[in-house]
Length: 200
Length: 140
Image (cartoon, rainbow over all chains, first blue to last red; front, side, top):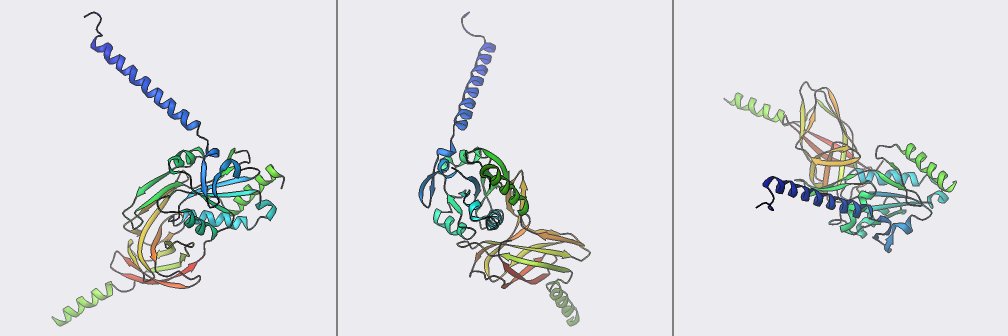
């Protein structure tokens, strides 16, 4: 009987075991997330498979996450950014990518996304991230989203972050463009980036 | 008896008549991007009466469904929800605008034409209603 653990010791042992298991699991989760590489993730575009690591080369890359049934924020952002593009010279515009990442893969196809974004500016590239990687991909850039059922005709909506993510040519995440920014402010932010990185 | 009935009918008809204490300013509907038949209506609404009032329903011939929606932005995250009513405080102007309250429009029957006006009927909590014309505009 000596060799058997007392009830108290057993409890402590189990608690310690649980703690170790939780720590191990958390470590693995953090590790798998930090090792996630969005730049090497295969993205679907109208031109077939593309990679962010290729798209970002020698350009400032802007990423916007949205969906087509979004009645206000998404079209407002696309419209604001497009009107800004119309104020930039061709030389400057060539140094900018604008990538629209679909968050509603159930409803929005690439063709529909292309029709939609073309209305705003030919520069906007719609892409679809493989669904199993979408959350990690978005989170890497500080973007969160969640599907929310509504009793509305919409059936569901997607709550999502509204900032435009800004990336340097080497993939560094720079200060984002917030939805609340005025057009002149965004224009000066973009001009400053073009000046800093390309002396334009 | 006849007079009483007449009075009741008169009061009932007055109640469902146009609400003159409500004034609508700059009502617009955004032209949806191609392939989309949902949109949003924005406007300013002045409640000049001595009582609080609510918009409880909206209807129009140019689309199948109209809903009252609210939107809130928190930590750069956009959250849109349907609401049962939009409260209009007395002596106050309530603004339905981008990033906030709006009338969401579903299943627009025919593509909207830029600068054309579309009839819209607002229904209020005091049983009154108001017919307005909303202008179709491009974004921005």
